[in-house]
Amino acid sequence: VARALIENGAEIDKVGPQGFTALMFASSNGHEQVARALIEAGASLAVVSKDNFTMLMAASYVGLVSVLNEVLPQSDLDAVVADSHAEAGYSALMYACKNGHDLCARALLENGAAVNSQNNEGQTALMWAAQGGHDQVARALIENGAEIDKVGPQGFTALMFASSNGHEQVARALI
Image 1 (tube, rainbow, N blue to C red):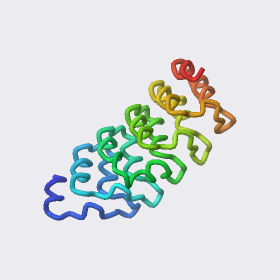
Image 2: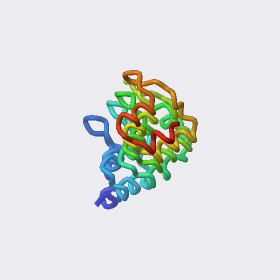
Image 3: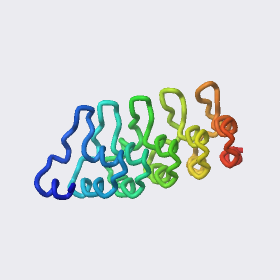
Image 4: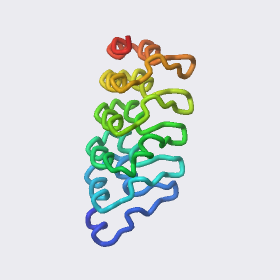
């Protein structure tokens, strides 16, 4: 259906009331084939919604690594990857780490994502990985220079988040 709409002149970059494009909707709902069709048709990759959400964040949130791998090498996305944060301060990397998508996290890191940035609450991607028990994600972050002892909300470090949630493998990676 998406290809037929594209072929018949649908406005692929039209934004809805909250500033989402079709690509952002497809990505946030995990519709890989639709997202890829929109990308192939030239959909804008750098649209930012009213709450500063991007298609990179959407793809990272649901784990669409193939979509990320397709769009990340494009040079016009450098600033979006490194500096873009949703309204609450979440980056694409934080979304990937929070949800345990290690391949997405690695793709973002390889393309310049800021490994130690903090959201509005002071939490880092490593803290999200630790809190969720995502040991492979935590290892990828550590390999890419994540500050293990950075202090976040309530004075917690990533190790404290891992320990308080019973995530032994993450705790071991942090020691």
